[in-house]
Amino acid sequence: MASIQYYDVILKPVITEKSMQGMESKKYTFLVHPEANKTQIKEAVEKMFAGTKVKNVNTMNQDGKTKRRGKTSGKTAKTKKAIVQLTAESADIEIFEGL
Image (cartoon, rainbow, N blue to C red; front, side, top):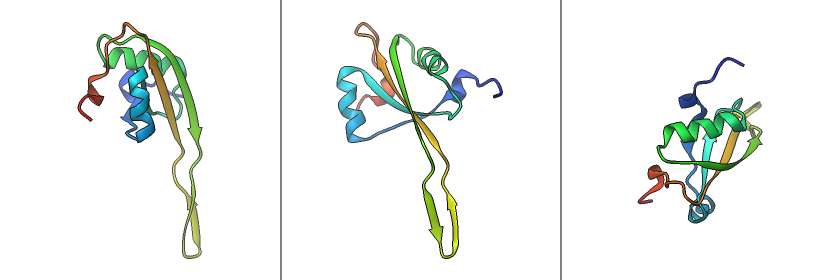
């Protein structure tokens, strides 16, 4: 694996009903680079969002779905999601404010 910079780790936030409910308890969900590990995700969140302190990181890998178009079949890209738990004294992430 080549060296992944912290700005390459977090791809985009996941906006769903379940992730919005998790924000009440300072849990934020992100789509992350498939080869990033938990320490890289923690470091990226703390560097990208000022005033945040990460308590815990949970990750999950999702395989690509099999899709067909006529006789031809293929797979979509695999993805990785991270649920980041912030500490109680940590600042909120502003990207999710007002949603």
